[in-house]
Every structure is written in C-alpha cells, then in structure tokens.
Image (cartoon, rainbow, N blue to C red):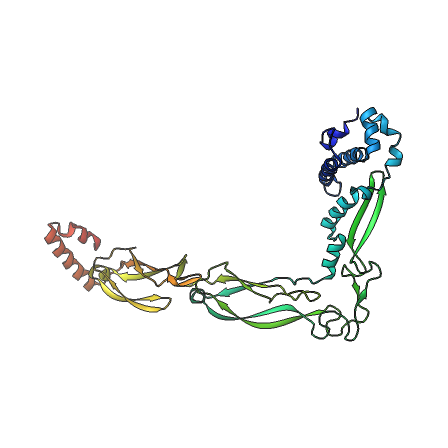
Length: 376
C-alpha cells in the first residue's frame, strides 16, 4: 500500500505551495544519491520526488486529494517528465548541490565573482628561534618564495599588446551546464568550463615572461619584527606577503609560526624562567656570595647560611616579558642543589670529625649525633 504523499513530505494536508517546496528541498538534499550513500536513500529520494511532483501542481494535487494514488496514476507518465525548473524545484536545488561538490558557481552574481578579482593564497613559514631571541624579541631576516604578479603583462597572462578573449565554450561565464531529463524532473549540473578551467577567458598569445600564468615565483628576503615574550606556536601575520591575487585581486598574507629551541641552561614556565645552581655543602652551611647566570647575564646573589637543598631563590623581574606588554616581566626561579661529596681526603675527614666532635659535645651526642652521622 502506497504511503500518503503528505506524510512522505512531512507536511499537513492544507500545506501551501511554499511549505511543500521548503520541505521537498530539505528532504531532497538529504536523500539525493550523490550525497547520501546509505542503503535505501535512492528509493527514499524517488519517493520524495514523486510526492512533490504530484502535490506541487494544483490539478494533480486536487485529483490526489479526491481519489488518492489512483487519481494521478494515469497522468504519471506525462507528468513524470515535467521540467521542475519552472517551479523552482530540481533545477535550483541540484545546481546548488553540484556546485558544492564539483566546485561550480551558479547565477550571475557568482559569475561576476568568478571573472572578478580573486584574493591570493595565504602562505605559512615555520621559524625557529633561540631561547633568548624569544625572550627579548628583535628583528629577524627570513627568506620566502611566493607568487608575484607578472610586471610584463600586469597579471593578464597575455602577451603585451594583446588581450585575453572570452571563452567560446562558456561564453565567458566560466561554467558549463548539463541538463539531464529523468522521470523525476530535470537535473541541472553546473561545473567549471573544461576549456578555460573556469576563468571565462582564453589567452591566444601568452606572455613569455610568465608563460600565460600572470604570475611567477619569486624568492625574496624580508625583515620581520619578533615581539618580546613569544612562545612555541605563536603566530605572526605579515600582511600582503602571500601569493599574489588573480585579476588584480589582493595578495594573501604570510603567517609565520614560531618554535623555540631548547636551552641547555634555562627552561621556561609561562613567563617565568627556571634554572638550577649547584653549591657545596660548606657554602650551604656557611653561606656565600655567588654569581648566577640569567638571560641578561650574571648577577650576584647571596646564599644565606643554612640554605637547604632544593630551596628556590626568586630573582624578581628577570623572567620573560609578557607578550604584548613587555614592561611586565616574570621572575627567574633558581633551584639550589647542594653537592654532598662521596669521597673525602684524609685531611678533610679529620677536620670534619673534629667539627662533628665539637658539635656532638655541644649537643651531648658526640659521634652519634646527627652532624656526626652525616660525615661517617
């Protein structure tokens, strides 16, 4: 038993023409065989098309409402080859479908876009920086290869003194249409013109400099400014240094992605810099005044007596400038490592034993005291 046509389209029996068209377009896009490869999609599409074919015409809809499927079966043969472009059915729907999948462009507005200026492609360059270059920024020279508009033909691709002519295949539109008539209506497929590759123009005499392309590859040097505080993955946009546009279109942009080389001495944690310093156990006990390396050079730092292993010293405002606000800087965090010797000379051991004995006498624990055990 045939399903109700209104049910197939998901509309009420008093739906107007616009509701029918809207529902039909939505379902046709969903179940068209070129789009939906699931099993049963093609049969569903045919069912939807048949329902719209009947209900979109007042006469056949009236017969269907009165007599059901039997009322329209006799006229199905003639109605099956109706050109749905007249009612905004298949033609505009599938033109859009094929445009999306074949890269075609439909309509006069898109035709002007095809023959008008086209923006050039954006380019990407990956650039490695040393650790200090990323911290402080500065100028950097790079080399890029991009398309530039041919100066001889001004980008037309034609030999100086000549001009491109309209393509005879597509009459300058850049696209060709193919209409296929089926029992379910007319299918219009729009695709790029194979003769002119969608440009709408033919060049009879090519420019010798660019061989008719209208642009040529150029390698050039650029000086770019690296902001202070950049990090891995920071992206810089260099305006208008991408490929040149077509037909006087604007050039694309160059995007420089920054990657930071690791440093043997410093590491980074956000806008803070991390490093380590190793001191002797005597310096840890007695204290010391040492030079600590920073990204700006050595600075003098006091190591307090009794400094414990793994304590972190903070050197304020000696970290990484905040990107976009270089006045604000992070800190340099220095982890103190205490070097405990594994071997002692006889003289060192004798001195330490005396010290351990003195420490023990004061605590009443002698060589069994904590200080004594440390150097046994």
